[in-house]
Image 1 (cartoon, rainbow, N blue to C red):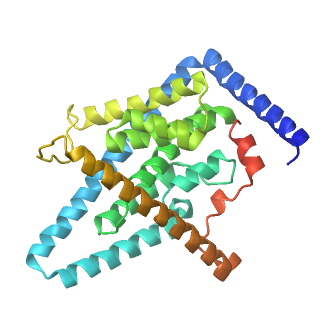
Image 2 (tube, rainbow, N blue to C red):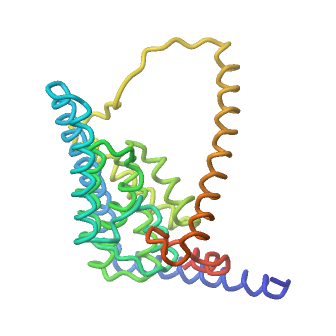
Image 3 (tube, rainbow, N blue to C red):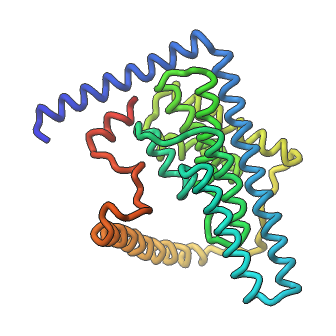
Length: 300
């Protein structure tokens, strides 16, 4: 990319950013109550799905643990994993194929203007299949499902609102952040995740919409769970000044291993592309975009 292309690209980015912010501000002026209602429902929907997600996982997991007290582990664990994986796979394959994977790549693909199915059906299938899979013992986390479920709820709100594309991107990202806020009881974490990881934008009007949604999600989750933000577990420990040295060493070690892990993942991805090429059924079609398209779409 030569110097003239860089200047033209910067000008296009600036123009897209200005248009996006103007369209959102216009929507706020003309339909402020409807926007507020959409943000409220998005935060509430993200909190309901997150609470249902955690409750469902705990129920199936406790059932599995109860069976382990009566039957041998070599029977219970494989059977649970087999049935849970089969049910989850069937639900996703037959009802909502877009609910496969972690869920984060689907949301990011939508925000990069890829054709990714986004609706309540995808969110519900993600909810049910995630509960079954994780509750059955699959080593998966709640972050990806929380982001996709929150984003799906937000997309539905934007569709009912008949909002412009710029606002749809913002509210979907806000819904993803709201899912993080509700499932981890971390509104600031959900806010930062949506701004830094999903939107790559820090315009004041965008910040306002996202932070409202994430705090609504966290507050409603606390209220629906009885009005107390209780930690998932507590640890009794003592801490001394000498422990700072050990924590520093631990951080360095983890950083080195994390770098090796990232290189390993990238190496395996490259190996899979070389071996399977277009026949690789698990390839991530949602995240394939060139650098120029990424820069431009980040401001739409």
